Length: 312
Image (cartoon, rainbow, N blue to C red; front, side, top):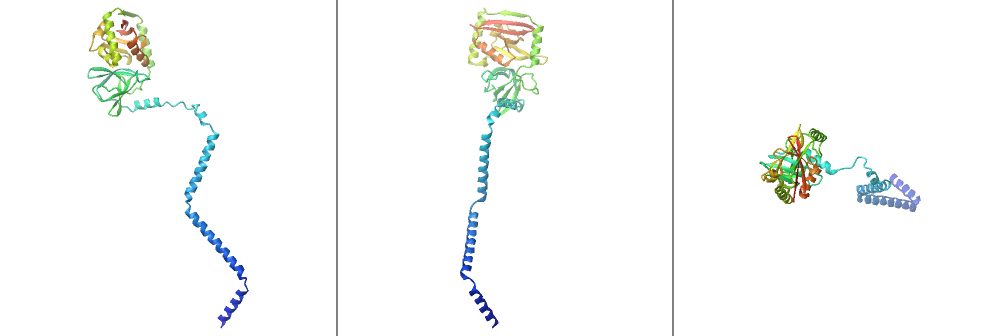
């Protein structure tokens, strides 16, 4: 009975409330909740990380563009504040340092180093036979090729590996030489001071010598390595310093005998070009191929002898 009375009282109370306003409030709350759920579902479907990355990338690009427009880096680079990068020199140094001494039974008799590959050359002896090689040539009797020519050594490539062939008597532990050392120049100057007198042997009217020299020139024009047929060449030293190149007859001794050369003569100049300076040595070889009159200065037992001959 009491429960019935309570229900009746509650119903009366509800009847007195504004039903329409309550319904509108509930509907508004339901709409807000539905909107919240829809927004949450939408954000879950969008990849948030990609949005952040794209935003960061956009900001970074904008910053770079702004920096590029604010600073002119080309003008700063042109100042060369830290020096100018020389890739070729760096590669040469690295190549020499990474090339151990070769085990091939080869002897480097002479080397003509030059900044031009066309004029770089080396005279290499194998099993008693000398040949002249240019960059890229295969060394006779081996599979090694000549890769680079320096003053006191050459770099060869054997089975894909770089190796060093030292000038006969040179020290592998010494730094590679790109030009004649001051010590060598001083030594040569001292030698010249000791023996200033030059004896001249004029062979320009020797027709037999001119004809032999002409054959030498033709052979050199077709194959520079042919010079070893006429002359054998090896470095000559005094107190450990190269002072010239010792000459002796090749397998065809006619030119050597006709010219008046003697075994043991040390060549130091040709047509005024210093044979110990790479560029001048290359110019001397060119002169031998083109000039009509040739002057060869040799040191013969501490006496300077200038041999003159013509190539008709």
